[in-house]
Length: 72
Image (cartoon, rainbow, N blue to C red):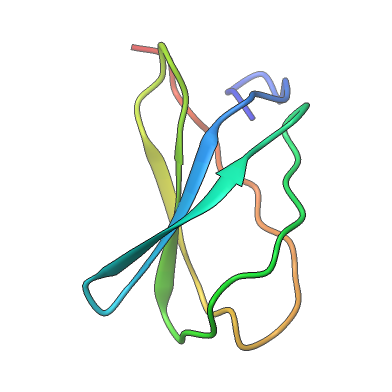
């Protein structure tokens, strides 16, 4: 989402212990995918015109994550 809570299309990846996995691209700000199991990894989002965003998340449990992206 952007800072006005509008959904963004972004490329999503997951980083854990030095390994990076491409997860997919959001559609209307949403992406439902399986992630590799990891504790304290980072979900990262990248969209054109925005600063990359990330949040720490353990994928050993189900849940949702919102990442705010700020315009350049």
